[in-house]
Every structure is written in C-alpha cells, then in structure tokens.
Length: 286
Image 1 (tube, rainbow, N blue to C red):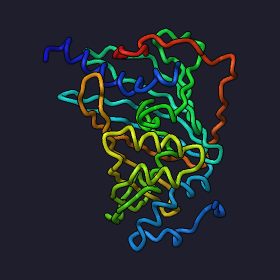
Image 2: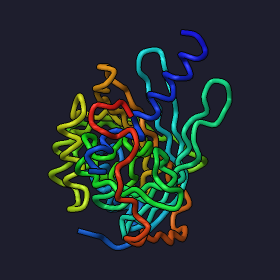
Image 3: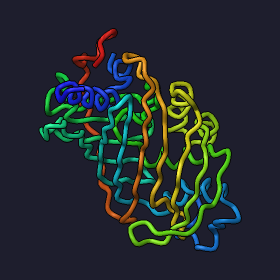
C-alpha cells in the first residue's frame, strides 16, 4: 500500500467510527465515600464490578481521558478525547481529536461532544453542518448504541456495561497513575447489561447487543479502594458494511480528578442543526 492509499484507508477507518449510523439519527444509591473494606476485591470480583457505576455516582464527577483504537486489515488508527463527567446528572463533555494522517497533516478540527442519557451532541461535526450548530443523535438509533460511534465511550455507559458481567477474575494489585488499584479481567454481555442499566442507557445498550458482531465484550478494569473506576479497557467488534470487514475496537477510559467541577449545559433547540448531513445519504460510504 503506497502512502496515498494508506492515508485514505486510515481516514476511512476513523470516519467509520465517527459517522457510524448517523444517517438514522439525522433523518439503590449508597452514602458517599464507600469504605475500602466494602470493596471485597479478590473475594467478590463480580460484586465489586457491579458496584462500580454506583461508586462513580457517589464520587459525583471526575475528569476523563479516552482512547479508541481501531484496526481493520493492515490499518490502525487512534482517536483520543479529554473532558469532564457529572455522574449524578449523567452528563459529560469531551473534546475528541481525530488522528493526523501519515504525512502529519491534521485530519479534522477537534469535535466537541456532549454525552447525555439517550443522546449524543456533536459540534464541529463537519460534512456540511454550520460551524455554530450542534448535531443531535438519538443513541438508541445507532447500531452500536454510541459505544464507538462518537470516537469515545460514555464513561457512565462503560461502567453500566460492567453490570452485564458473566465472568470475572481478580488479577492482582497494581497502580494506575500512582493510585493503588485492583485489576479485574473478564467478559461482559451487552444484552445482560441492558437489562440492569439505568433507564437512560437501557435502549442504547440493547441496540449495541443487536448491532455488534458479538454481544460479548472482553474487558480489563482497575478499581481504586473506593470502588471507583480508574482505568477501563473494553474491546468491541463491529462489521463495516461498506467494506464488508470486521473492525476491532479497543476503548480505554481513564478517570481521575474526582470531585472536579463539571458545569455542562446542553445546547438550546435553536442551536441544533436539523438539516441533512452531507455524506449520510443512504448508499453512500460517509
């Protein structure tokens, strides 16, 4: 593959994730600060992981860094994001960066994403959308439930996916960014997770259970002594219908700075673009 072909292939894989499914979209809380002894670690890995979403709610908010690696054929690209998340309001704001092409040129302006139960908002979406407008997508209409579409997995949805764990083991103690954590490894089931998810995320996870190549999601989770996720790596597989190939996606989430202020406001209706998005017409590759 020459340089021009490699550049084109890399952009196609990245665009597949950001654009996947957009055609359909366009036309028991406990007290805060759970004690370390309440997280049973090696004795009860399923219990600790099932409680991870609740521990995030107890923490209130945090900073978040995301990384999404995609591989298809001989091409591998990475999309990175950074922002804040309010776990009690279930709102997040990320700045997502598409990768540069092999020549070093920037692939796209940063995309601002607002994550909410049931919807994804994107600004600087491109493809004919005015620069001052947002695109709103119903996550339940996406074949992946927005686990990969936006180039980042919603942190709270990722935590709720752990409620669908079928099997898990305690790997051992280690550190993430200087914080002592317990490392767990296992497999979650998207359909099972959908049944136990909060109302706002249930439909999206159910859509993902049907839309992915497999409903099984291998993961590695790192929880601190308060049971909060510090690092979570989940691996998805979906079919790229246009290329008739399976795309392997590894989504990595880092959470830190718990208690950070997260003032997140949704766009006014007048600021949401409602026209057709260029490249999303049926039959086009996007």
